[in-house]
Every structure is written in C-alpha cells, then in structure tokens.
Amino acid sequence: MKGIEEQIRATSSQLLATGDVQMVIGYGAGSDNTKTMPVFIKRAEDVGKLVFNPLCVSNLANYLLQWKNFEGKIAIVVKGCDSRSIIRLLQDKQIEREKIIVLGVSCPGQLKSGQAEAKIPADAVVSEAAVDNSGFKLQTSGGLITFSLDEGLLEKCRQCESSRPVISDHLFGEKGFEADKADLQFNDVAALEGAPLEEKSSYWDKYFERCLRCYACRNSCPACSCRECVFDMVEPDWVAKTVNLSDNSAFHLIRAFHVAGRCTDCGECERVCPADIPLRTLNRKIIKDIKELFGAPMPGSDLEALPALSFYAVNDPESQN
Ligand code: SF4
Ligand code: SF4
Ligand code: SF4
Image 1: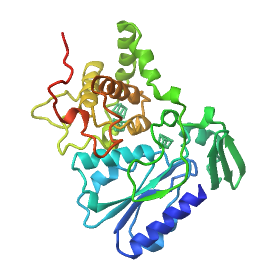
Image 2 (image 1 turned 120 degrees about the vertical axis):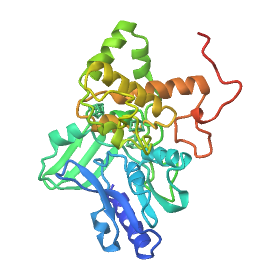
Image 3 (image 1 turned 135 degrees about the vertical axis):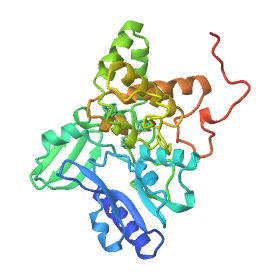
Image 4 (image 1 turned 90 degrees about the horizontal axis):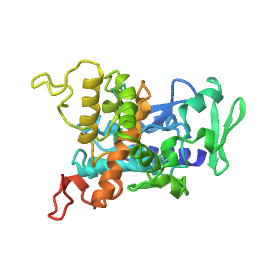
C-alpha cells in the first residue's frame, strides 16, 4: 500500500501546487498507530501527512457536507464503498461535481479496529502493509504483524460490492478486494427475516433499548444531509428526546426510512456507535427490499441511474394489504 500512499501524496501535492484544488481531504496518522484520522491539507508542503493503509476505515465523504460552502475546490480520498456516497451526494445536489476532485483508491480491504488494537502495539509505527487472499501483513517498527482474513477483515469488506471506486478523477491501486459472491447475497438479513416475529422484535428491542441517542450515527452519515433534522426539532416535537425503548425505536425506524434509497451501506453509522448496535443490518434490510421490489442497484453505484425512491413509475409495485 506504500505505492498507493505515495501516489496520493504526489497527486495531492501537484493539485495544491497548481491551484487546481485548495484543500485535500484524506487520511492522516491517528491518535495512536492503530488508527487513522481525517486530515485537511491546504498546502503542498503538508502532503506528507497523508497516509493510506488498512486502518483507513472511515468514510470521508461526510466532510464534503461540512465543507460545502468552502470557497475553492476540494480533492477527497475515497475507497470503493465511500465513492458511492459521493454519487449520492451529487444526485441529491448536496455537492457540485465541478467543485470536487475524487482521488479514488481500489481498496484492498480494511482491518477491524478491535483486531488492530489487540495486535499492533500503540507505539509501533506501521511502515508497510499488504493484503492478499492469505490476509493482512503489516511491517511495523516492532516487526511483522499478520492477520488472517477471517480474523482481521471488516465485516463490510466481506460484503464489498465494489472495492474499485465507481467515480474517480485519479485512480490509485490496481486490484481491490474481491468479495466472495456468496457473501453478497444479503444472507445476514435473510436469516433475521426468516425468524419468528417475537424473535425479531426482541432482537431489535435488545439493541434499541441500549441506544444512548448520542446521534453519532446520524452525524457521521453522508446520507443524513437535512439542514434541519427532525430529531433536533422542538416545535413540532416529532420524536421525544427521552431515552427509552419506545422513543429510541421511533428514532431508529424514522432514520432508517429517511435514508432509504440513499444509504450506500458505507457502515459508518455502525462503526461509530458506542453501543454496538448493528445498524447496517437495519439499513441493509431496506436496501434488500428496495432491490427486490424495484430492481434497484446498490444506491450510489451508478451516477446515471435514477435513485429508486426519487421518482414514480405507474407500474411500481404496490402493497395489496
Ligand atoms: S467495503 Fe470494499 S471498498 Fe470498502 S473498505 Fe471494504 S474492501 Fe474497501
Ligand atoms: S450512535 Fe448508537 S448509541 Fe448513538 S444514537 Fe446512534 S445508535 Fe444510538
Ligand atoms: S445509514 Fe449508515 S451505512 Fe447508510 S449511508 Fe448512513 S452511515 Fe452509511
């Protein structure tokens, strides 16, 4: 991955030096060596802060919403899954195509942060990383650290629809991670769908009950782009601010419907949730239903495709109940 990192730095340096962009949003070293964090580079001499390795788990697309009034052009580093968020932001007219340059990475797969924390000493500097079918190999200042794909690969990578960005102006990396076709069949959702109603209900109650209503899931979500969110409103008070099963369930179901057709399964909501609530399962259920009902592809996978829930066709399926 050193090659990808060097290419990102070289391209960013050139874009900033020529004035083609005024800022690069990418990954930088994190608070310890098992993490990365977003960096916002405005000077060509600072591109050395940009990194790319198997710890670049987060989706940076959400920062385009936060910087949408930035005066100038922004280059942004995206992996395959993140690139779908760029397409959805363009389709929702949240960002203008001519104001961004997409630095796409054909992503080799990302590491589960728990595994990284367990095996990489916090003071060990990762100097080189590679991923192949046998797993991750990280060369660190403390020696070689390996993870098999079974132990190390993020769950969302196992279900990766496209590790190659679906939109990019500059493309880095030759071959991305290829998911097993069997893992792309929404088997996880189907297993829960098939459970008895009481079992499904208690499954979700158990998780919704422990939701803190911290809204980290909403704040990190590139599909949550309303200027005024219903959950912040006081008048009308659409959902009570109390933290209990009833209001928490309302919050989750409303948010799931608000991002229906726009959720790209980037997994950020689940990744940032301090209560470990399996939010991807909830959103993947809706992605699966939309796919089956309307034949729609994964949201964000095609810039030209009309988003499934954004237009009406007379032959759309209707509930018979
Ligand atoms: S889902 Fe695909 S593109 Fe996204 S991090 Fe995993 S392997 Fe990379
Ligand atoms: S991040 Fe988790 S705990 Fe916080 S509001 Fe979302 S689901 Fe609840
Ligand atoms: S709901 Fe979650 S998985 Fe879907 S786009 Fe938002 S953060 Fe990503």
